[in-house]
Length: 50
Image 1: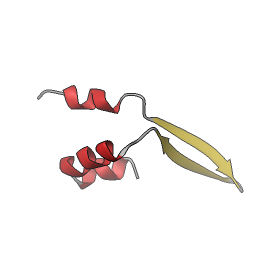
Image 2: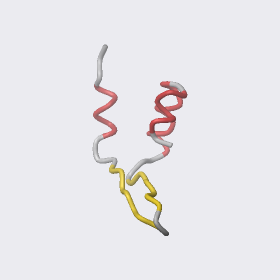
Image 3: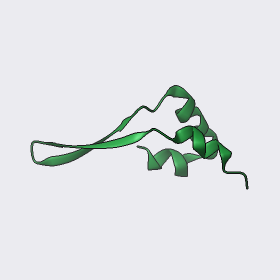
């Protein structure tokens, strides 16, 4: 399998912030293109980023 598509995901960062005692995760630098690719890969991959 060619993993070249995953190079397009470089630069996406997961930011963790503590808000009111809870840890909240947020994705930075993710664009519509990335969501489309994740949707094509299926729910399993899409849920990794949710």
